[in-house]
Length: 220
Image (tube, rainbow, N blue to C red):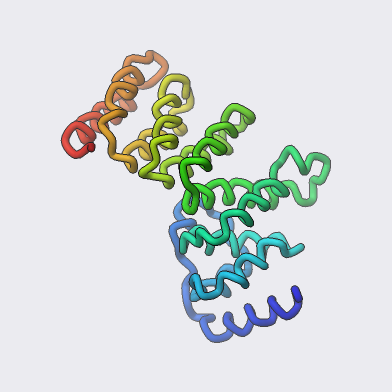
């Protein structure tokens, strides 16, 4: 089945070999799988192929399928994306150095994809991952995912709480950008408290102030 599936993908690739693979996912993930160009013209009508690819032994194929699922927001694949989250979790792959880097990329991508296709229940799951991990990179993609879930009460609650304890300015900036996607005035007070924290630079506090001003004007 895998051989047949890859053969079909190659067929697509020969047809569209001159196309450039560029989706929303490329804004956040620099790794390029060799299969990426083969997925460029696929859409929801190819959902069976995309979902089946998530269970391939070829991790590059899994990565490309995940990217496409996230780019087209294929909600039918949510259960399958959660399966990928489980098998790619770094905690489940300790002692496999040859695969750890690829699986980590897949894990981070699946977090982002879950944000693209998930709901309030998934916001709770993603928020719990922050408590279970000390990895800054993982936190970054969870924040991105919580922003992608907009509008979501639980996702926004998690982001507002994060303003109380985030210390890394890169994460804090991602948190602000995610909050802006929800565009809610309920974030103004948490951001005001965030701006009072001495850990942040004056330049960053200006970003917070601009965000508060924007939410005051356009927030719901």
